[in-house]
Length: 366
Ligand code: SF4
Ligand code: SF4
Image (tube, rainbow, N blue to C red):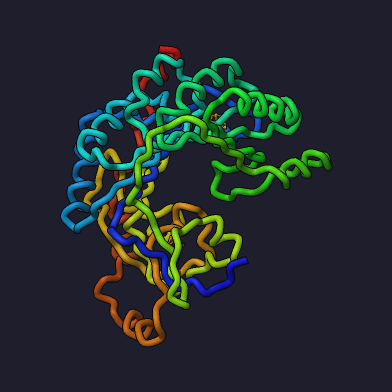
């Protein structure tokens, strides 16, 4: 285990990462999923122009501050079911051709839909949910996508009662897909804030999970796109390596209290449209994707959380301060960002979100 002291997470060139949970509607309702992730009472169906203008405003602001790279990760609910999804992704692709665009989807859209839109995506995390997915159709789309995008994760959710059926299906996919990256994924409440592991009682299932996490094989060419939107771990002995949030967690190095964190490098849009910097809660609400994005900008805070939980938060650039710097930071109250935000949030009373009152999603098979 790597126990060198981590002193900085850094970006060699500044990048903005946007994680956007577009709404809370999903066309599946998996038994292990929190209804808050599929119920659809927040549909975010405001006017497209407003989303586009607000996104442009944010991007322009970061570009002026010398942010060179951009990364967008869409999830939901089911993002491909959102009526604004393709117009927004197309707009981003046109404005920022080098940006990394990733989506977390249940892959239920038909093959024709993916044929038409695959050029918009670099990374696809395709979750398989045995209670709802059509096995032949899911396989067909994986076969199509596996040499069309930079990264395709075939993420198989290990449903407790149908565990071995999923395993058998995964083995079948491995035989047929010329390229595969399969993630055997134990159930956990991954879409809630307090992610906690599901307990499998059966010893054979536990053993399978211990022995299997990812399997991959690539036998035919696929597009390669180097992402410059990457973070590096810097250690106290002068060494560095690409920052992998799992490694940081496993090494119990995700405790950054008192560190200076560039929290504004990560923008998180919740299903209601509310925006925070990072997902840790430290910034509090700083805007709304439909209503106000004036305060979305590069920001630095001194972390006051004991524990940095989430993978996207862990890779935000941050550094440990020296004792001398800590003294200086404590007396510098001029840029008290959090107090400023509290005041501003208290004044903003018109965020009662009405955008969920749009029409129910049309037919996902379209
Ligand atoms: S687990 Fe994913 S596919 Fe299943 S209901 Fe929840 S959001 Fe939808
Ligand atoms: S908990 Fe928040 S403020 Fe603290 S290091 Fe993580 S992302 Fe930054």
